[in-house]
Amino acid sequence: MNIRKNEFAIYETGNSKNPAIIFVHGFPYDHLMWDKVIAGLSSDCYCITYDVRGMGSSIDQDLQFTMEDLTDDLFYVIDKLKLNKPFLCGLSMGGYISLRAVEKEEFKFRGLILCDTKSAADNDEAKLKRAAGIKKINESGIQKFASEFVENCFAMESIERLGEDYIALLGRSMNTNPEGAKACLLAMAARTDTTSYLSKLKLPALILCGENDNLTPPAVMKEMHEQISNSEFYIVPDAAHMSPVENSDFVCEKLRSFLYKHQ
Ligand code: MLT
Image 1 (cartoon, rainbow, N blue to C red):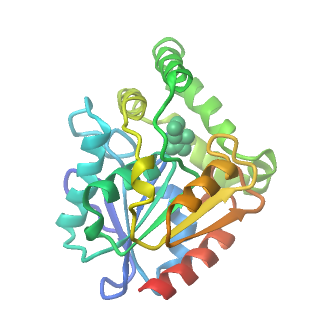
Image 2 (image 1 turned 90 degrees about the vertical axis):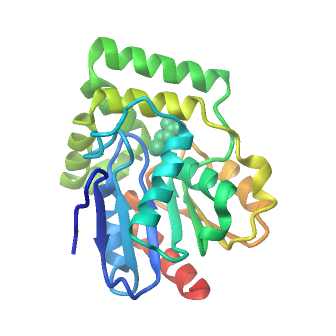
């Protein structure tokens, strides 16, 4: 069952009496990137997802925002649904939000799942790439920017295998609100570095990285795993940067056993 609520586009699937898990999507996507994972988990879990501010249907808010606002939005969704210690699962930009959220208020969560993300802040090279992205959106439009960005996130074999599903996802990304996309790029460029918190983290953590992820490579995520005391790390086969979309079966299986172990 999907229910849309007020200002943020919030979606709930499954029985609210089951353990709750909240999914935070990456850039430039929307909540639907979690569809297959949620379909695989919703008989045992209460699955919540939402469109991050500026993305998908969450475009009615102030579009000048920082990573702090995106983190507070996550807490807002948790409070609004009165979730009691949900698991938190974020991909890439959703991982940046999740890492900052646990750094701020770890006690609010039961466990952390990080997919294809990193704790390091943007270095100068990455900041210049964000600037070039904003320029591209201004000069050539969101469609051109999104089509190039999204293609770079997927393994070529995944694009072929996913077929219509990839085309639908790409179409949604190309339809992203350009002001929202530029605001997310700026928020990511200005985010803090959460690496020093990894060794303090007490929550159980599951770390998943696509074997061919060039944006947040396995070696980077393995280093994060080595710093988080209670963590498991798996490389997702047949996937690049969008592992929950490219190999949802593998991601679901790892998530299911992690949630079962820590519920
Ligand atoms: C994402 O998938 O959310 C983006 O690759 C994050 C980023 O650009 O840093």
